[in-house]
Amino acid sequence: MISSKEDYIKYLNQDKKALGVKSKSLEDKLVRYISPNPIWTFQKRMRKLEFYNNCKNKGIFKLYVFYLKYRFKKISIKLGFSIPINVFGPGLSIVHYGTIVINSRTKVGSNCRMHACVNIGASGGKKEAPQIGDNVYIAPGAKIYGDITIANNIAIGANAVVNKSFNEEHIVLGGIPAKPIGEVNIKKIIKHI
Image (cartoon, rainbow, N blue to C red; front, top):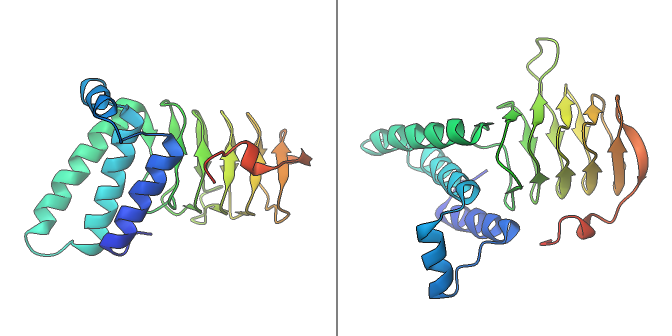
């Protein structure tokens, strides 16, 4: 969770690296100005809102936080995301825009790579939501729900339904309900770590 200006800069830099956003040349900057990456725009707005909401939500800044929430909600609806703030650690990479629904009580560690049609939430009217570790790959259509924990360095397969905890690292989860179906070197999937 962002708790200082240094954290904010760290999160932005890690997200930029995860998404493969280049910013060195004038040509890259011009291309981004003419045709901005909507996911990078979303993530920048999310991190900025997290920073101001967590660190500067007093006095006149309350109005600015309200404005940031408005802009964040607007781009969230445009991209089909229902992603609350203060859920993801640094290094988030959303691969495609499309329906993504995340419960506000979910916590996801650093370097998460996630595709479209992912749903992470509570179960059966309970408030508890999944707690997901670092370096986790979530394939398209995965559903993760309930009061569960997912260890570090795990890949969750397409359309998997994860409804119980998995504490073993370096495994691939797949199926309905999900179960370990193999081993994985997560660095081959999440290349920026």
